[in-house]
Length: 248
Length: 387
Image 1 (cartoon, each protein chain N blue to C red):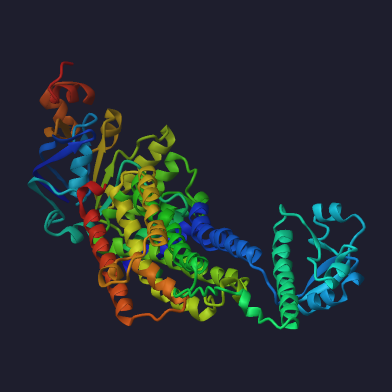
Image 2: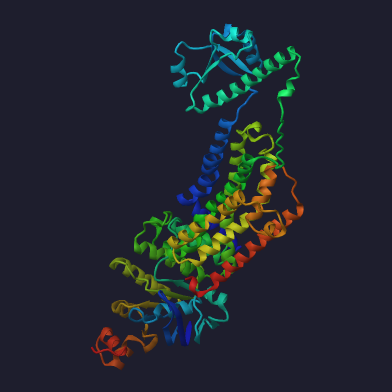
């Protein structure tokens, strides 16, 4: 479960202008419940990744607070990380290691013992249908295969809360559908899932709750129906444009 | 525990990387000692004249000078018959030298006139030139023996012609040649260490960032210092292995170096090399820490390669500085990493007395610098900018 309240983050320095301040996130508040898929929907540069990074304890918020399963992301960093599985928007897997070795590395780092790890890796290989490439080095994998390995890695320590940063980026239709099925399954198993995307159909098809983020602020939150009701539109795309203050 | 996991993964990962393996296990430890050490040894051997080993000498008309022949034989020349085409065979290096005894040789000797001898030499051939120097020295000795006998025969003390006797006393442990040979050991050891950890350090820091595997890694429930320690130990492992392999291959290369080639004052036996490696071993920590820290500040592997490439000048700097400037061993220079090891290793190879205080200073100074750099690396990894 995630409770984020008034999160803000300003970065100092951009390439070429070391003193310039960039407000990445101004004020983000939203809740994400267990057993539900919460979509963080926003255009490029809206602050989705920075929000997820703050929740994943990679970046410390300048203002506001966030709690993962009741633990503060600023005070209980290691506990939060135990509860959290984070998949950034690039798979970031090790090309010279095999699928199993990639997953095993994270399992051991999370403190799982040998026996548990072996069983868990087998379980994930089966769950994500990775049997065909489980023992191959990941160099040259397709984007879909890479995403599966990265997802398996993020899930290896059975985290209650799962953060996925644009997981369907670069996936083809079949891979996307497969991934959606897995995400839905994880939510049905009681996990809290936060999912960032800029693709409307993606969010509309999958998310129970939607938080629209624009210019570092949450513009609107609710279920798909609520958002359509509030904006009086018939599609998520129109509702989104209205919510971020554009003309439909 | 998690530190060991990181260590194990980095070693496994990088053993599968051809570049890392080539530089860590082949370039520094095998190729460099062979090319630089071996080249040096070979050139020294070539330039060194050995009077101890018998060498063949082609002589035309040996029968005209039997006394000279027995003198040459006593001085380790095995007399052979000269080939018919003297000039051609010397030019083609079929024989190194030919000594020709002209017809008038014995007659001139008998009448106490300068007796001619002709030596055919090919100055373009190093072996021929070397043999000519040796023959010249032996012929000079023969000439002086005859001079002395003649003067004594006429009742003159031969030493009357030696108005000045210059005695050169070299007070250094060894001459310039020994100095270069001695500094080649720390030089090669240090270069091998840097090369050994070079690609691994880049791969585990800047490489990880570039592959975007750092972000998920840092979101795992593991303290940053443990993570950095694991990576540091992996670099340390490769740097250590490189230095040990280099020590072994240097030992093998210098086994080829006969003691007389180095003036008999250098020592490159197993004990010396072991001692030298032990004295240099704190550098394994220091160099690993330098590589890690510098690579951690960079944003991409390309940037890391540029900075670390520039850094490669540092291990070479003391080598050149010590060639041109005589630095007196003192407390300060002896606590500096690299500079102190250069001096200590040179002293070991030159069989000088080693001051234990200097050893202590060198070890503590180097390890302290390594610790500071390691702490800096941990700090760098704790920044948000590391992503």
